[in-house]
Image (cartoon, rainbow, N blue to C red):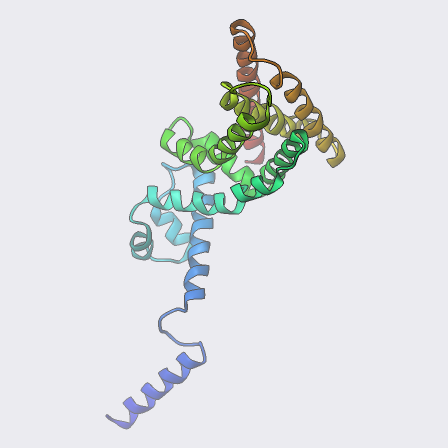
Amino acid sequence: MSAEAAFTSKRRRSLRKAGRGPGRPTREQTERRNRELLDQALDLFLEKGFEATTIEAISSSLRMSRRTIYARYGDKTALFKAALQRAIEEWIVPIERLHAAESDDLEETLVRVARMWVTNLKKPAGMRLVRVANTELFRMPEIAAYLWDRTAQPTLSYLTDLFRRRLRPDAPEIADAAEAAAAFLILVVEGSVQWATWRKTPEEEFDRQIVYRTRLFLDGARCEELGEHRQSTLLRRLERLEKAFEHYLDDLDHAER
């Protein structure tokens, strides 16, 4: 080896040891870079929509090669789902926390569950997921199903089991437990967020709405199973509430843009 080559080789090794030269990135660097990729990708998907966002635009914004992105995620849909999954992991209420919140008092248990959900919905990650669902619901129903399975469904499953066990202790079975779980999320969680956000209410009023709506829900849900006419009327009212909330989220999305 020539003197020049030996000198160059030694210099490269010293630079790598000092963290200033080329070489394989550490695991921490790779993970950090991947988080940056997922966050930036989701921001662009929200800003431009899924169809208008390209891998090239994502790679340019990050100064990351397209080859690296494709090597990690294969295609744009896989990248989108991975970005969503990262947001979900930051936002979701773990099922273990729901079980830990359960107490001997059903009302207290439901208030705790609602508070956890409302708190998470108000986080930036929660609002991002809501915006993604609203934006891509009709164009990509599989994404809406993906979000549903990983966010609302675990809580609905827990609530359905909770209501079967404890909603009407003297009843032989609770045939409408699943419907009651969905009604609780719409009336208490979504309704409280909608009410407080529209009115710009202080935090204590926000919490008062949670308690009030939980009691309102239990007053009806603890009764015997509704007759067919009353049940269909209640479902129509819940559908109207859900549509009104969707319109509100659309308005909020436009306002943020």
